[in-house]
Image 1 (spheres, chains in turn brown, blue):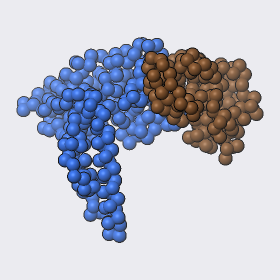
Image 2 (spheres, rainbow over the protein chains, first blue to last red):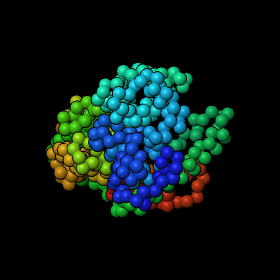
Image 3 (cartoon, rainbow over the protein chains, first blue to last red):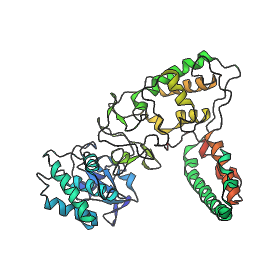
Image 4 (spheres, rainbow over the protein chains, first blue to last red):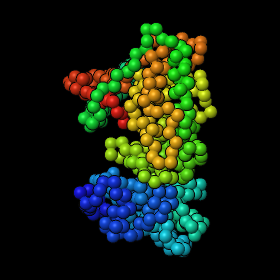
Amino acid sequence: MISFRLNGQAQQVDVPGDTPVLWVLRDTLGMTGTKFGCGVAVCGACTVHVDGEQRRACVTPIESVAGQQITTIEAIGGDRIGQAVQEAWVKHDVVQCGYCQSGQIMAAVALLRHRPQPSDADIDAAMSANLCRCGTYVRIHAAVKDAARSLA
Amino acid sequence: MGDRFAADVSMPASCRLACSAALAALGAVVVAGLMAAAAPASAADGAAFQPTPISATPNRQEGLAAFAQLERVLLHPRCLNCHVPNAPLQGDFSRVHYPPVQRGADGKGVAPLQCATCHSTRNSPFQHTPPGLETDGKPGWHMPPETMKMSWLGLKGAALCKVFREPATNGHRSLAMIEQHLVTDHLVAWGWQPGPGRALPPLDKAAFDTQVRAWIRNGAPCDATEPLRKSIGSTKAASTREVVEHLRAMAGAAAPADTLIPTSATATVSRSQP
C-alpha cells in the first residue's frame, strides 16, 4: 500500500511501486483530467505537481511520491494562481481540441509560482516543454501574461 | 580544509561574541545535519571504499596510457552531455536538449523546468524517454553545480586531464575523491546502465575502474614533463571528518568524531550530489 496526499486528501493505493502516477490517477482512481499524451515525458500532457513542482506523471513511479502532495488539474482551481490561470484561459479562449490543456495549465501555474512576473522569454522557455498540436501557443502566451497581470 | 574554520580572529570585535555563539549554534546544526545525512547511507551502502595509493615506483607512460583510456569515456555522450558550459546536451549525438532546461545554481535545473520534471527515479523501458536515477528515494538527476561546472566540452588530452585532476576545476576533489566518485558514484555508474536506445561508453565499467586506479597508482600524470603526484590527498570520509571535528570544537559537542561519521562517507556506493 502506497500512501500520499492527492489534492489535499489522504490517499492510499495498492499497486506495484513502479506503476506510473498517471496510471494510478486515471485507472486506479478514475481521475481522467490528467491526460496520456506521448507516454515518454516529452509532450507534457500528463503534468501534475508533486510538492508544488511539476512532474511528468507518465514516467513518475508512484513509489517515488509516497508521502508527498500531488496536485492535479481537478484541484488547481482551488489555488489562487490556478484560478487566475483558468480565468485567463477562458478569457483568451485558449483551448482548441483541449487535449494538452490540463498539462498546459499545470505548467503555467508552476511558472507563475516561481516567476510571478515572467518575461516573454521566460514564458516561451517554460511553456515550450508542453506541446500543443492545435498550435494554441500564441493564446497560451497571452493568457499566461494576463494571469500574471491579474495576480500582481 | 580545517583552515576554513579557524577564522575566528577575523571577526569584528563588536560581534565576536555574538558571531562565535552563532557559529557554534550553526556548527551544532551542521554536525547534526551531517549525522542525519550519514545515518541512512551507512546502513544501505555496506563496505568501505579503499583508495588506491600511489606506487613507490610510478610509471608515467603507464599512467598516461591509462588516462588515454579514461578520456575515451569522459568524452563519451553519457558523460559529456552534462559536463558542458551551460545547458545540458542530449542523446548519442549530443544535440541541444529539449526542453530548454538550464543548469541552475545546484545543477538541478531552474524552476519551473527542473531535471526532475522529466527525469524520474528510474529508467523507462521505452526508448526516447528521459532516463531516471534515484537518490534516497527521490529523483536524483543533475549536472555539476553553477559554482563548479566541470565542463569538458572542447577539451582533450593534457588540457582535459588537468581540468579533471585539479581540485580548483574538478569540484574540490583530491585524487582519492576522484577515484571514489568515478568508481562508486551511482550517477557515474548510470552511464553503463543508461536504459534502452543509448550507446554504452567504450570501456565497460570494470575496465574503466581499472584504468582509474592505474592512472592514480602511476602518479596521475597529464603530460610528459610535470612532476608526478606523490599523494592521493584526503578521502571524502577524512575530509568530512575534519570538517565535523572543527564544527564540533566550535559547537562544544561531546561525542567523538568516529561516532558522527561512522561508515557512510567511506561507503562503496556513494549517492551523487552536485
